[in-house]
Length: 427
Image (cartoon, rainbow, N blue to C red):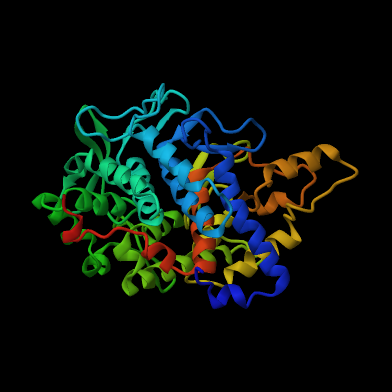
């Protein structure tokens, strides 16, 4: 039996009941966003529309594959391995009628494609979104030991990509975000979630000297303290610039769960704790906000403060809080589960809410939070005409799944399934 942490075992019964419900719902939202024939996953769960949505996100499909491993471990989905096979066959172009768009020369995927045909939906060929897909595939390959086909397909997917195109400046750790006609463009300096791109490049082409220089010269554990840092009070937080500008908290969370060297690193854990503390303390500057409200994450603000935005310290239009960010930090701030419970119990009782005097409000509330806590405006929660999120982007929701899994099962669930770049990975 898979281990259970003391943090989970010691929860008071009402909090554990909430945890169990929210944890299971973190997978149910993903499953509701999956196309049953192609196995692709939508960019977002539509709270007031039909699901799955027609727009697939290649990154969300990687999240979906990791979700299947959690569902298999927890016994939530008896068909998890079969679903993973379908998804991987589809991204490899082996499902009839669906050919997800890829760059012909390098193998990188378009960010958004049609759920049924794989046709590019006017999006870029993305290195980070492709990396999130491949990371999910490899994770599934390590988990589903009884189905070696999954690992074989995941390895084939990794090997089909020419990773060296991601390098913009190997000496400075600058990575190309976009591939166009076989060439990398739109470069971005480290530190950021593109550490995952560098890791997979080394995993896919370990003998390439430029890729070696990119990783070992910039992203290896010994280099973590050399990244630029933004300073909040007396807390140093990793960033990608020298201008004291902070990154959205998800930027710290994705590498923590998906880059094996970081998942195991005490050095990165210290930086991760700093990012968590800065996020929490910045929210305390709002005098009318309770301590359980925090989380600078990315997500849609439709109908409130523009469209999609990656919120961060000192740059958060309308100060929208993201509950999934709190969940993502649970390995270093386990008390955050009580923050989530307080939010649920006092403001968003998503499985109990009724409003006999306003059935329209009741219907919208239940639709918006059918799978639990996510993105919300504190200042609108208690208003008569509150803001209801119209969708939940799966890539951002992933922090909810990852954090709750780690809280209950420990970070070993991730470290045991992440593939490290060692001699044994060479092909």
